[in-house]
Structure formats: structure tokens, C-alpha cells
Image 1 (cartoon, rainbow, N blue to C red):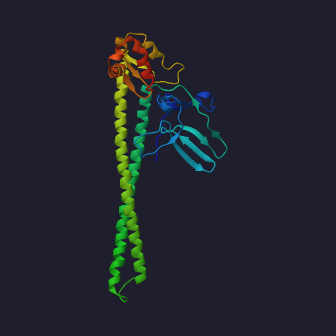
Image 2 (image 1 turned 120 degrees about the vertical axis):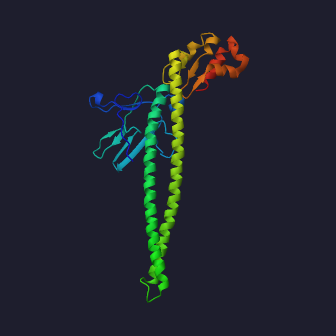
Image 3 (image 1 turned 45 degrees about the vertical axis):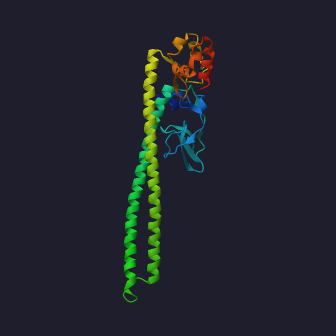
Length: 292
């Protein structure tokens, strides 16, 4: 299947080929999702894409082996992050750069999911084409089978084909139709899996879009405490500083963790009256950090 490469020269996040800006010397940068590698905001190991899955790996890979001494690895945008050529050239070094915060991560994930849906559609078209060919083959086998079957009752002197030849030919066409029936059933299962997984991807994108909008509004209003990037020297600084304020101020804020957005007010509500005590600020703070 063909995936159109998306230029990432000025693209913040994921794999970015900076070779052109590095005097032609190889420079491949990688910016992780906020939640990557167990919410550490660090680069995860590459994982092969499964087009039938309902999600993408955080660091997805399209690996191609051209020959015994030639191979490469690309992300879903088509950026080549590793290659080995038959002439001995090889590029493997990846420079990890600052991670994206959660809002940036969700935007990038939605772009990747757009391409993932294209891949699913291409796979669907391939399955559909295969089914059309299978139907044609079944009709042809049916015609051949009938020709031999109609010939057998004619008798030794009137039949066009040798009886053994006819039986063998009929068995062969029967086997073809049986194999086609099994393939059709398997293709239907694959189509159904594609459809269900695509629906799940659309739901993820819708959920991401809704959260992106909420994060933007909270950021503009000053109600957002963003500690989603965990690769910083002091990732919880903004949260720690918040708890220098009154409980009334604290409960109006939202905290953006690497993997989700939470309301401090809701957390305090779950804790009950104990959360209202000034001495429990440290406990609330510890509870929030424990969610990461």
C-alpha cells in the first residue's frame, strides 16, 4: 500500500529529519508524546503497525527489508529514521529532543490517525478487489465443473472426456471452490475487523479533539496547570507552586497530566470534608502526583 510522506522539516514532534539543516550530515530528531514510555515523556521502542488494530503504537514503525543487506524503517508519515543500504551506508542514530506536552501530543496523534485511516481504507480496497477476483474464479470453476459433470452421463462412446480425467478435473474445481469459500469467510472477518477498528479510531480522534479544545480554553483562562511533560528537570514545579495558594483557588484549577486531564475540584470532592483542611494540601498534592 502507498502512504504519502508528509514533510516534517518544520514539524514539531515525532521524527524530524534535520539533515538538510546540518550541512548534509545525518541528524534525525525525535520528540516523544507526553505519555510515552509509561508517562515518562521518553522515546519508546519502535513497534510494527497493525492495520487491523484500533490504535497505533506510540513509536510506530513501517519496516521494509529489500534484500539481505538493504532495509529501512519509517514512521507513519514516511520519515525514514533508519536505513541500511547495499553499498554499506547505514544511519541509525536518533537524537531525542524535548517531548511534546499533552495538547501537542493529541494534535500529532490525530494527524497520525488520519494516515492510519488511509491505510485501513487501502487495505479495505485490497480485500474488496480480492473478493471480486474470487467470485470470478468461482464462476469459472462452476462452469468447468458443470461441463465435466454433464459429460459423464453420456456414456463411453458419446462422452468427450475420459471418465478418470473428468472425475479428477471435477475434484480439482471442487477444491478450488472450497478454498475460495474459506478465503471469502476469512476476508469478511478481516473486513469486519477493519470496520470496527476504524470506528474506534474515529472515536479516539473525536475524544482528542474535544480535549484539545478544552485544554486551549483552560490555558487561556489561566485555569490550567500543565505538568504533562515529564522530561523537565522539575516537571511538577507549576503544581507545587499552585499549592502555595488557598484551597479555594486550588479547587478551581485543572491539572494536565501526561495521559489525562483532571479537575482538582473533583479530586477534592471525592476526598470529602478532609480535603478542605489546610493541613491536607500535601495529601492532595501527593494524590495528584500518584496518578502519573
